[in-house]
Image (cartoon, rainbow, N blue to C red; front, side, top):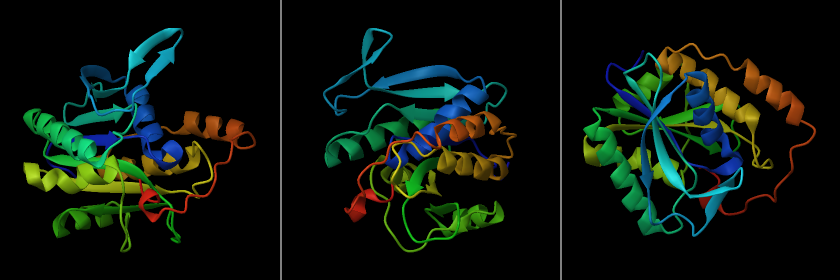
Length: 225
């Protein structure tokens, strides 16, 4: 693994659910065990209904089978308010630090004029070199909005290194499985983890003709999440 320290792979829902799909796939693929659930008062005032059962939005932490050096974290939603985002990011980073994590990799989506399938950024020059060594193109000058950007950006405040890897997407699909697959393929080198994405490819083919389109997002702040 390019990381010599314990690493957390994190994603909150964003454009095309790119990062969340990738982390959720990793959780299933690695037979991960849930080790913690974190409720948060700043999530949208809604409940999820699954097979008739209602529950609050949560943030869940998982441990992959046979990999004590990796933590996976996924959430049902992002907070509604900016202050809530910063508060939750701080709580997440404090908890990860207590678990021995030293590197935090968030997964997100990138809508922009680039030729690469995946781009990345990090919170210091040495970390950027790690991305380059893993074959991940460095993100051009831009912004990353929402929790996936804030968690990575705030990581140094808690003594951690932050990385954000983004799968490029057109932004016109509610769920972009292809961009999620590209993120997973980039993680194979970064984490030195064997990841079979064949199941995701099957789902991608099945949904290729069925995926609904969403209106183009004109707010620049929402283009990188």
